[in-house]
Image (cartoon, rainbow, N blue to C red; front, side, top):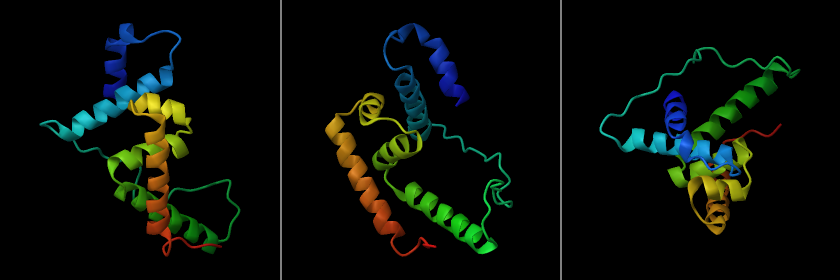
Length: 138
């Protein structure tokens, strides 16, 4: 993230006023990520969260069982998303996590809108298949 912001600051004169700043930043972040994975030096990120401690949801008023099911489901969903090929993972994260519109995703990834809808449909189908027997419904 820091590298992305540094690149954005250095290239701020290339930003065109009136265009989508968020999409411009996502494109820089995406390209930075892809370059880090295909470059000669790949750096491994380290989580700042303590992995031994599960996240605490203070607002939840569930039972211990429902909390366990939620944690299990969250982990299953994260694993399923991580297993998706990068083009599918990008589109589903930008749409469902970042809540970008299809047009913003198309602009960010520099792909046609039809490709966005196609990849999103395929990504969701793969996720449904991967989670069919794994997710617990309360």
